[in-house]
Image 1 (tube, one colour):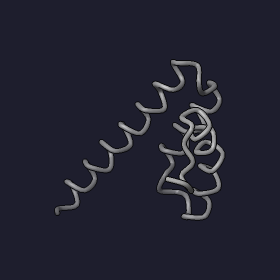
Image 2: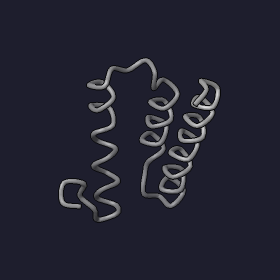
Image 3: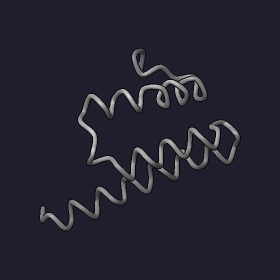
Length: 75
């Protein structure tokens, strides 16, 4: 796969990810600050180490698990 195709796929994935969280935000399930934090993380994704990224996403992932009633450790 060419680099430009990989880049386009990554950008599409980011858009889908933000769109999903935007739906949760519009439904009132995520606060404005939580949504903005997520968008910032995605915008700066390449700047984070895996550890930093995991730490920043941990709270948001827990929030989504609470909303959806899912626990990634039991699925």
